[in-house]
Length: 329
Image (cartoon, rainbow, N blue to C red):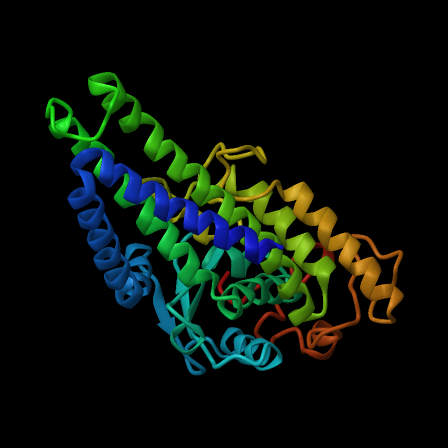
């Protein structure tokens, strides 16, 4: 149902884009709008991943520079039956992560140093499994297209002012209609973009939890990240809010509600869905049905990893309370 909804929303955004073009320049404007959208999408298809990674100063890592983190992604990708993506680390204190790339064969996943420092190994695995779920579902391409169309609609709406006084345009409401279009068209595009993003987040949570085998670890990670993003600013994201939908939790300060304009569902709703999934998996023999968000499920490749690693190993450094943390702190 979510895939059908996403298709309908994308079709609606395309129709809105062409409608704005028609109101500005008639059939010629509609065709021009379609050509502009196609050109922007082709450019985004081939270059969006490099642009976003560069925007956040991400550095690529391999087995030599980040052995444990790279091995984790390898294991998760194998479990998801995906090609090995490129792996990046972003020097940013806010715990967060995102995936990008036009398809699974050309995908990249990125995590901040804040994520690797503040979450346990199992929680990081849950987060990165969520990002690989976006890759497997082709969400990275879908969200690139919606962001590109939303930006193009806003651009066309701004152009409308230059054509507002033309008697031969196709806007029957004159200057009032032009002003209304300048305001409402970008607003409608933003609503559609947010709706697409929210529907994809729920799907990625579900598939990511199944990939790592530990829904409650992902739930615990979401709670920790959600609390931190309102305390630790992410300045590159604040300067580029159009990329906010890419992150596992909205990186912008002040975004708390599951409202019409939210890029992400409420964290509480996502955690509740993951807890329900954990109970379902428990009923099937995968997890304890009574386990809460702080419990350590036994499914997935990370069960027992902390117990088996020596204290000096990567992700084996202990802090207060005995919990193991990331290798970057």
